[in-house]
Length: 426
Image (cartoon, rainbow, N blue to C red; front, side):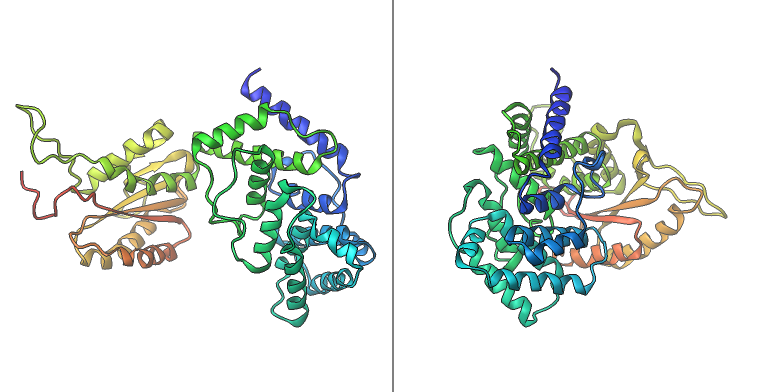
């Protein structure tokens, strides 16, 4: 069986577990599925995996039910807000009232909630989403939930990462850690990717495993025994993890504009072994000196970097259709992405002041109705002898504010082994 067949079979199997098990799943698990799988932008919705209960139905259940209903309402409310659906202030007040009812329940009910990582995550998610300010009701709810999260133990130790994320939603203390799990326990690794995918704003700074470990994780997710019938939460985690990894691998094969930005930004690291010899290493030949001295040198270097990804889609220095006596001539472009890469060189301190004006002029020439491009990355090579990296953020911000068509501004410093501008004589 090919990798494509194995992946398709595994995805279909996992979706089947979720479809058959959703109605019988506990309410907090239903809420988790809504939050992680019911995204309008996700291909997992075609066809829908389960019927989504309305926010009103979730609140009605939370008014009279226990903590599972409250957690489902929290997940549903956060899902609604996360996807740009208006959630009126009334929803936040109702949710806080439901929390107050849970706080008044018997001690055994509180102990059960403290041991349920998914329920804690749902309540924390709802509280984080409404964020109506530091009113007394919100402060009280957070304090109570904080005490629930800090109680040690739980019914399933493999769900402890969800508990840690719940804590971060409440107080932002970074309990989740700085890296995703990836190897020891496949269910923990899948859940980590699922949590990162759905709460990417909270976990934005969390590092992913390296490429070799991500590939190993992908292989295990499609080859090792999957969750059993009825294990809908673990099936959802596996399904989301496979979706995340598949999208990532597809992006590496067919890069988009963001991937181009990452590739170009990584060129700074490629200078680590840049060749510049003081004396030749072989008799009778010139010393190897890879000089970058002008824009054409940088363009050639970047074309070599991007060629393995785009090949014939790369277009080098072409004039664009214009009117009057001036026509735009971009440095190079990626036709499939409708993207121009514009290279600029800083040689003196005065060049910084001219940079914004140059880009403004380029924008006026490049993006006319008659031209086939709609976005641009600015690649700035800092060849000054006295560089000022502390000014880079301000330069980036100023250029990006010029136009929404500028998707990124990348500033790269000259390799340290290349001599200063006044010391390059042969």
